[in-house]
Length: 94
Image (cartoon, rainbow, N blue to C red; front, side):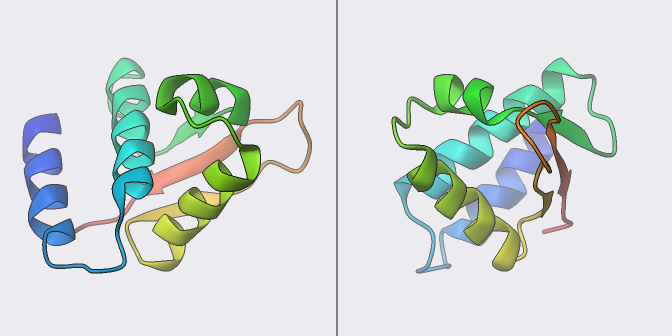
């Protein structure tokens, strides 16, 4: 399941000029969390956890790329309303 999901992702991004290295790193970190949570229909992630997984040092950079992944149609991103609530992520069919 995860392997096919990643294969579809890489096939799609290979022809999408909007996607850069940081988008790929964020997406791969999300897939890692998804797999660790036994591949539910949606995952919950905290920004600080994602910063550690991605090695992105700037919250602004991370948020820019996760929001763009949502705008570009790769994920559905529902931001957390405050720092004590995790954001909700759903993967879109590629």
